[in-house]
Image (cartoon, rainbow over all chains, first blue to last red; front, side):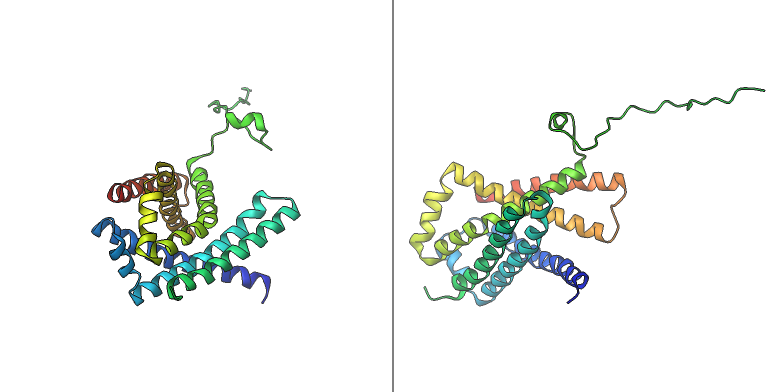
Length: 111
Length: 140
């Protein structure tokens, strides 16, 4: 894929993921505002609901990608040392991958 | 023949000029509010990304068992410093979200003139402060 087309895809996905995350944050903050602080049982039964699990997974995966693209764009504006930049980029990829895999484990793994 | 005035009739206001801003000048340099919104959008984004793994760790603990949930409530949420950090992250996500929505409006070239850019940047700060305060008040 040409470099410019990759950037345009990133630009769009950055916005699509932003909308997905925003919808999820509105949902969660709305629930908290309406129902107040949950206790253990309410919290865990919310996350036992398959629809809510899938919404959470979608939001976390969107966040991992959104953060990956965002951080990769922000670092080189402030970090000019190539070695430090390489470390930050590697950290960013690892953290995004870890978040994506871990979220699947937390939501759908065995307890 | 009358002399043509060379000096401008209205004297221009003296403005400070910043080129390659030096460290000593930082005290006098004030970023305009759309610039502040932009840099805070970046800082909150990086902060959220860095804290994401810790937030997942807390989510995992809160879902693992009733005891895990109680550890969060009685040890983390009951700790004033941890509570301030978590409410700071709440502000970060609310601000980042609202500032991001403003940037998407600006993608459509709306709110690009100076006064709208200033007003909307101020609005982002005000709205995110109000939303954060409401949620914090509800969860306290």
